[in-house]
Amino acid sequence: MLSCSSIRNQPTVRDLVRAFSIDYRTLALFRVLIGCIIVADLLLRARDFTAFFTDQGVVPRQLALTWLGAGTNSIYFLNGSLIFNLFLLSCSIVFALALIVGYRTRLASVASWLMLVSLHHRTGILSSGADDLMRLLMFWAMFLPLGARFSLDAAMDDAAMEKDPGPSTDAYFSMATIAMLMQVMYVYWVGALLKTGIPWHLENSAVYYALSAEHYSSSLGIWVLNHFEPYLHYVTTFVFSIELYGPLLLVAPVFFHYFRLPVMFMLICMHIGFVFLLNVGHFPFVSICSLLLFLPGGVWEYIERRRVNPRSKNITIYYDQPCDFCLKTVRILKVLLILPQATVQAAQLNERAKLLLEEHDSWVIQKPDGELLIAWQALTWLTGRSPVFFWLSWPLKLVDKLNMGDRIYHWIGDRRMNLGRVTTKILPWRSNRQHKNWLTECIVAVCFLLVLNINLSPVFPKVFPSTPHSIREFQYAAGLWQKWNMFAPRPVRWTQWPVIEGVTEDNREIDIFRQKTGKPDQTKPAHILSEYTNYRWRKFYSRLFADKYRRYRQHYVNYECRRWNHKNRDKQDRVKEIRLYVGIERTLLDPEKEVQRTKALGVYKCRT
Image (cartoon, rainbow, N blue to C red; front, side, top):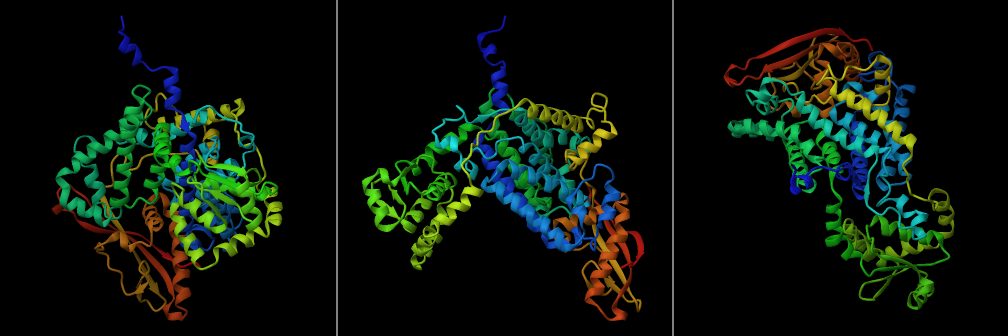
């Protein structure tokens, strides 16, 4: 017979629902962070726009279409010009900014996902685990109420204006929350199951090999390797264990509150280590963003009780009642400045506020001590009360000291009728309540099963067979394809670097990779990572060295020829052919046995 204590420890349906629920405030945090990551990634990609997006770059559209085959869909394939692709990039940034502020959040999330799928299909040779995870998170985010809190949509919620209490809890549960949290778990759990190599299990040398690969490892990573090598086998055990068991503990229905935060902390610390020790792009930042989806509501309640509510308590914001633009403005400030306890009220209902409104033609804010503020001074003080954006009050004070604050305020106030007509169209009052329906739940459930099969088929091929070709085409077209094999089944056990040698019309040798004259040095550079322009170029060269991507080499040569010849117009200085090499140094447990060699990849004529 089971004891009472053992019965209480058995998970119930309610426990499982709670484990796979996501707090509305957590969804808002995720919305802002993923939007910022998308914007940052797009801006970083813009540095090499000609090289990676146009037909004059290293991957012309026809090559990308031929390589990707069926299931490929990308708006970027419509035109290969610089102007068109810059326009698409700008649109992607606008959609991501709309996602950050929560404007038409559902539409912004769908548009951001579509643009990410198009971007990643266009630049498939550059895609990494970070890109896959970001795209997949945005896919599941389309089915979640990202704009329910701290958004322009929440500020314009007419149901809230009518004092509709809305949901009785801040926890949101649906098929999409299950799919989203499971997606985060796949990265670690499936990634650990794919780590079957000896360095992970017998030698415990995986971290040693990862830090020894100098085209991945940062300067700090190499320093750690040199000074803490005896302890790296413990780090290997920790990384494998936290990836294998951590995801299961994140959703453990029993002792839910005891496991989740410590496991989140350990996984986030692991990614912080990646930031400083390895050059893996924005993968750690996307991963930390995804892990924060597990943040429980209790954390938010603690923050609100200790930090948020005291800063907004006993604050009243008075507006001019006939002015719809004024009401929208103060509601937006209340929501985006995160002042939930502040009261919004018509100035005509308070005699003191009404007199100030009529005298100064200004909104009025009543402080907790009863003092009344108006115009720019009120905005500065209210911003300073925000638990997150309080720092913005300092530049606002500077503007006021320059005698420009009240001028800006009254300039806007004098045009509030025209601004009201604009906001009526772009910021209408509307309900922000998002209700689950059976059709959406069924669509998410089908996609969830497809993704489950994608992740488990490489690990358990007999139980989860590979999907038919037609379904694989859909998975790829929808951006659902994924494989979490970073450092699996084992880390790379070599260091590599590019050696790109050009030959001019008068048979002089030049260093194409470093864009300088003279025969390139084939020995390993002292600091390999500093040789690359950025992470994307490092990813491109590592793919270019692989035989699987050899068809890209001629197009890369053509790009380098055009780039060099554009700078060197004299006929004798123009390059006529390029020889591709890759320098390789194997990593062994005994460093004295490491030997450098150079592998020739081919000689290619310039076809500009």
